[in-house]
Amino acid sequence: MVHIFDLIFACIIGVLCGAVTGLIPGIHVNTVGAFTFASSSTILAFLSPEFLGVFLISMSISHALLEFIPSMFLGVPEEGTVLSVLPGHLLMLEGRGKEAIRLVALGGFGAIMVTILLLPLFALILPPLYGFMKPYIWIILVVVVIYMFIRLNRDLSSVAWSVVIFLFSGIMGWLMLNSPISSGVSLLCMFTGLFGVSTLLYSLSESSTVPPQNPDHSLIVDNNILRGIFAGGIAGSILGFLPGMGPAQGSLIAQEISGGGDTGENKDSFLVAMSGVNVSDALFSLIAIYLIGNPRSGIAVYVDKIIDVFNYEHLILYIFVSITAVSLALILCLKLGDMVGEYIQQLDYSRLSWLVIIFMSSIVMIFTLMEHANLWFVLLVYATSVALGLLPHYLGINKSNLMGVLVVPAIVIYVGIGL
Image (cartoon, rainbow, N blue to C red):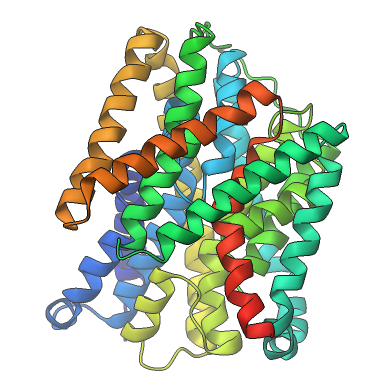
């Protein structure tokens, strides 16, 4: 019998570990999850499988929320936060850093609540659709992408440029993900160039400085914010359930449901939705074990293997753990985010940007060398990613078009299945 205080302790430790992995660029939650799983045979001699499961899900949820802090303030993206870089950056440059942190915290917390409240409906509808929809996912993706081209662009020229950038980033993504280089190094290289370093370089070219951050946030929870919360919860659940759906596709769906763009007047709603997608996905990828017997994330795979039989009691336990973890992570996000916002004002933004560029470029090279990949080839792709990432800034188009880097490979894979 597992003692309740042991589970609470596991939850707290998981949230703290997730905060560390979320705040340090280049460290992915799956890395810690893999290490924990590799050591599980030894750990399980002292701790219960439920203890490890609670630790892993708490860490996953905390990481999903806290990783938005370096994404927004430093422009350092991961797969789940790439589209948040620009709106988060813009809010910071408007002196609304505190507000941005609260939008992210609200989006993550609210989306998990939405996911839990809609779980009975999902349990009825989604399992019968699971097998049926798999051959048609590529059609859904194509329709969503075409609709986004039309909706997010003001004229034919913008549509044309959006298509070009989407396809070029998609070709690069397909080539890299089908190369001998590991997917971890490939994604790190491409995301850092497309969304991180390119954003920082553009900020430097515009002589951006961090203005005084408003000590009193003016966050108003209006219909747009509520729409963003629901968009994040629904899109996160969809991508945590359907095969072939990841943060790229979930972000496109959430962007449409929320009615926001990454640079438009609804960027607040967009940021809320992005946070919601990330955190809701962390929970629903675990719920998918119970609904369809198929874990939909690295952490969920480890939990599934550690827990011999994932039953209804485990589902209820992990739902309550998720509520506790996201509540604790919300407090950490607010406190740490405010600290970073206050501290970053005291720094030379140009110097800090260059330091982050150098740091992330070094991380790309270090991981490349550790994986024994071709360094010159990776650097060429990295430079190409930076160049592609700069184009939307100068062309005045939506930077989410660069998510072709993941959407195009997914479409190619599922076209093969569909045909």
